[in-house]
Image (cartoon, rainbow, N blue to C red; front, side):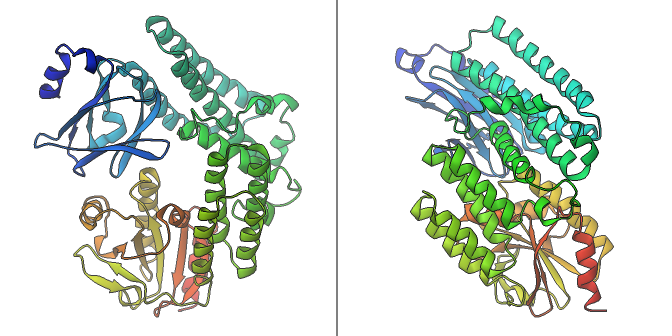
Length: 467
């Protein structure tokens, strides 16, 4: 495995090294030349692979907590505290499943990884539970919660873990449990209204003890997923249960729901940093899914009344100006893109047929895989339309081209955004959006989403314009 690094690590540490934190490893079938370590969305360091695809470095004054490591386009979390010596081995052909942590302190990262893999499997399984009675659903997820808690308790007995790690590990189990409950409440309120009437009064008792601004968890996916689900469920709790699922009140991207979630974030969160992160996401969502200029203005006006960071607000205003140019009737045929050969091409030059553009980022790996499966199926069903992929990343062209050649089935219809004046983090709000374009690049529809149940109906309506 990691022979050279392992030999060095197993040797005696100097007194100075004993107080430092070592991170090293080996990446099989690397997709890029580096390993990026970050915390709280801030890059700590970039470690480059040597000729044996290995890397390693001692770090001083490392703060204890959850860190993220990236080997673009993949990423995962690990747990570090001063004095740890962590070795990471992985194979990019099965990134998450292949990760192996070893060395002093590795058991903490092992537990978080096992929790992640279990959560992935359970999320698929849980989808089949949403037609169950609330009592039966609770019984199912209570069993999952108890099994994970028991596993953690056994690990705590064997290992001398810090209080901070135990707190974070328990929170990871708790918030996943709450996440399942919020998803159940959302889906039953929207699609299974009779079941929703059976939800007991104490079903959401955990809401009373939620910390909406945990600095230890604010970048941990389990925690952020739950907060997102909480806002989502609260937004539709206002809806008249007699309304159909297609009603605007149940639309997650409606201006009414987005505005309500902005108000929730403003009232529940005191930390300016965490509050800004929600303003960023909700604001960009509100702008990019607006169908009218008036709706865009209403989102901006609402955020101007909050304590939203002025610099971020100005970026959002830039996006608002761009979004107004992307409303139906506008033309984006002159948009400059790069193909896998590195040539620059205008969007209108790609095809002489109607087009639907979709957008992706290498940093959102699960979304990318899900998206590619849908697009491959749509291309088979609707050969009269060209589905055009546009990548929004600022990565080097070579990194993007390698992903396109190895992980997409139609590289000639994949393009890299050549230039944009919009911040990449704000552009992520476009990842679920598609644009329906005529042969000259005029926008026929700019608010459709791949994950919408009405998407194929909208595709057929679009096709009928040309038949």
